[in-house]
Amino acid sequence: MTTILETRFLERTFGAVYAARDINITINEGEILGVIGSNGAGKTTFVNMVTGYLEPSSGEILYRGKNIVGKPTRDITQMGICRSFQIPQLFPELAVIDNIMTALILSRQQGISLFKSAVSCELKQQARDLLARFKIDAYADQEISTLPQGVRKLIDIAMATVADPDLLFLDEPTSGVSADEKMDFMQTLIDALKSSRTAVLFIEHDMEIIETFSPRCVAFYEGTILADGSTNDVLKEPKVREFVIGSEFHRETSMQQGGQASC
Image 1 (cartoon, rainbow, N blue to C red):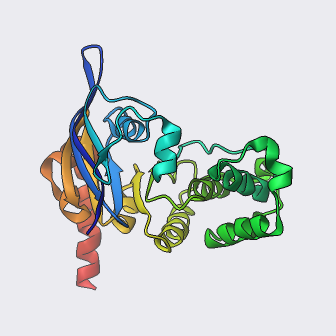
Image 2 (image 1 turned 135 degrees about the vertical axis):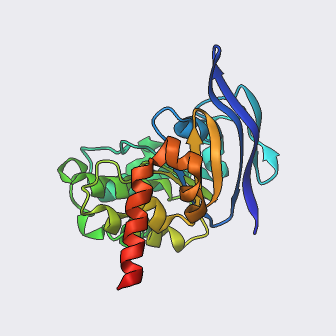
């Protein structure tokens, strides 16, 4: 496997408080990685440091072997590391396809003032192709403000992929999506991203989503990495069960597996 990102002893302090300490993570090309942990465990701090929104207090962030600590967010994005946010970053007054075309234009480093002159049949087709990849092309001409949260999130993530990033960070992609739609939402998302070699790291609180869609899992606790490995092994770790997911979840999972085995 080709390593695209490696962090070494990454730390971030706020005064005497450690928001992240000794974060050592390696991410490989095309890998899907789930991140779990309670609020304040250091998950978003880690993502913010890698994407340039927060400078580490110490440590290294190596992207394809080069240290990117201190580089501006825009430069990191252009290098191939992108992200989406828990709250979609969209233009609510514009139609869906206009949001996608705006992202395409900006990814080519063209000014937003050139939007009208930059629009072409080719650009529109690229936007429609991207929407079809995420199965939201039926919404192309609708205004963002009229759409449900799940569709908005897919649009936001689609916009984050316009430059075909090597690595994509997703901050709680299923947050705000109804419980009965989460699994279909994630399946659509994973299918769309698997069509490229983009590695995906997603932060998630729903353990069923983690079990189903992330072969590898990293558990954060109080700014440190509690466990890193196959999802099945991580969720069985006693410390992860105690401090992150709770023993009740483990009992329910065991009962479900036992019930399936006895059928």
